[in-house]
Length: 366
Image (cartoon, rainbow, N blue to C red; front, side):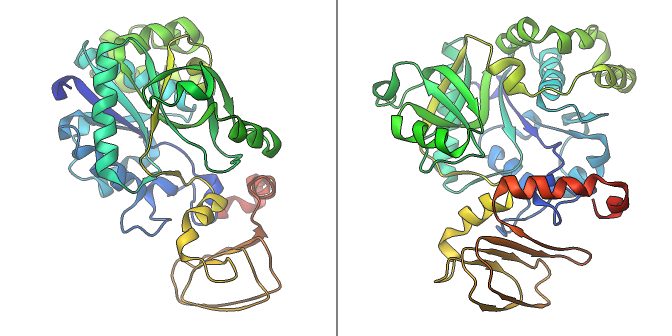
């Protein structure tokens, strides 16, 4: 692994709506310590890669409105390594922007794309895995994603089926992806789990930047065509105007749909470090398994009076109030200064319910 040619792009532009009401538009989850680990998600992610790469090779892509939050939490970040999107357009345009930026800096660049909001507990193994993955892409012209062996029929993760089935996973080496499936229903997730042919797609991606450029220009020209002229615009005084035009005309499209589900170069590396995509209240409840009480309640609050309540998540971030609850099962109770949320814990029901926050009368609570 040649560290001079290896880069990390941290994706930190999401709105974090599924952690509402703690995560808000003004300060979404990547800038919070929702899991109470002692650091915000983005700070954890940045520090993790300082163990792998030179500081000058770590970039962050986020929305223009989060510039100050990033610099407040990572003040040592070089200004040229903060890539600011003028409009939210999902992960494919963000990755295109980062790709062309890296190509201009170093045509031989290798890159890992890392979401800002994962929890990874055994970091030594993570560091070793990323080193191994960089070595692999240096020798192989593939788009490599990291995969985690599923432990439950999770409906909030993406799945990758491998070529060669169960036997192909025994070697623990990278294997070609047969199909991707994003967030299956519970019955299908059970089938995936039982088959032994699927891994959770961790969404951590590595490739030669030149290889990814070829694949993204092949499979999503409707996006990359908007970046025509990047060689003369990026890293110059006209970059802001160039990006404003490109992003304003760009569709909202994910990297998974735009490239990974279409390319024939998708491979997956089975990994064994402890990985959690804590993207929803229900997933945070799953992560808090070790601290649940005898009734299955995960509680983070100043003081709680609980009766006939089970398998519920109770969060009061300021830890100043007594939370008194009775008769709840599989519920979320989130109490902030200006919002009290009481809702079934099921992610799909929660998503449907909070979609109403988009109504004009609730604007100040977003």
